[in-house]
Image (tube, rainbow, N blue to C red; front, side, top):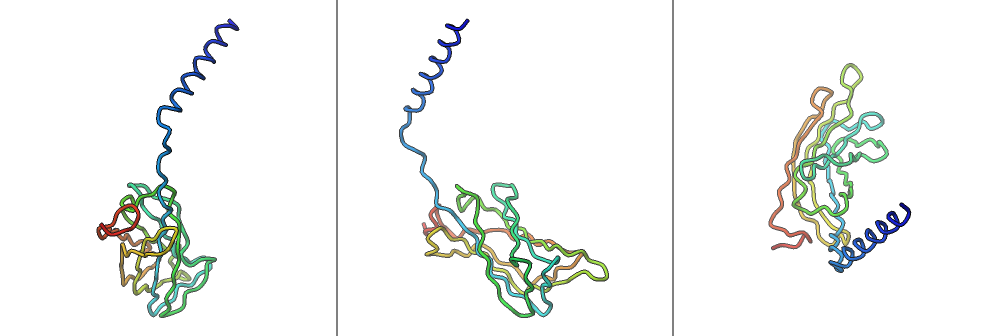
Length: 166
């Protein structure tokens, strides 16, 4: 029994070694991608605290990590502009990003917040941050406790996986 086990282990190791050397080239690593959100607030502020705005990129049909755009739950005053950059998961290609969903954490009711967003612009960049490509835009939108979501489709303007124009 012991010899059989030893032979099986050796056979497995030799198969692993031969398959490991079958393709010596590592797969190319894609550059890390980021989304930059530029949000313009209208004539009703985003309160912050418990009332915040969250972005969720949809990649290959699946939601990814949620990101609070008003970082540290900060208040965004009336008629102000704010930018937040978030990373996308490793090995994401530009064409993999299908949509971004914004939603607020408003409770609604008597003491719930409302917020007027004049406009949001979404741009994509890579680690170098040398080029920003506009991929989405929406607004105006009034967020309330009953209307907390905004779906923004993404349009890639003829770029390849390195964010260079084709």
